[in-house]
Image (tube, rainbow, N blue to C red; front, side):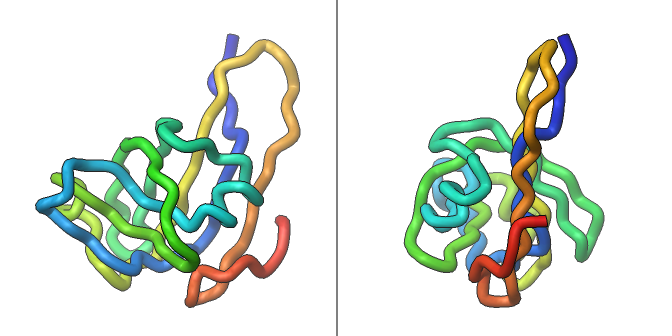
Length: 111
């Protein structure tokens, strides 16, 4: 078995960070659907701005939202550019879904 990248949202902009929230990353529901990321799925979030990497779980949110919550809000702030990645443990080849978004977190294209 291998852990394989299966879904990715590329170059999203963090729209809010809230240390007082219980935890997680909230992601635009439509971006989740297009990328194949599920509610409550574990994801890795990498800041292109600072290089910080965190792991958390996903909560669906309103259009355009990419919000870092809980303790992770100390590391990744509003306005940072991030990559959000989900992985699958499998022994089979899978089809990777990668989406590119613009500066307002609107879907641009599949990569």
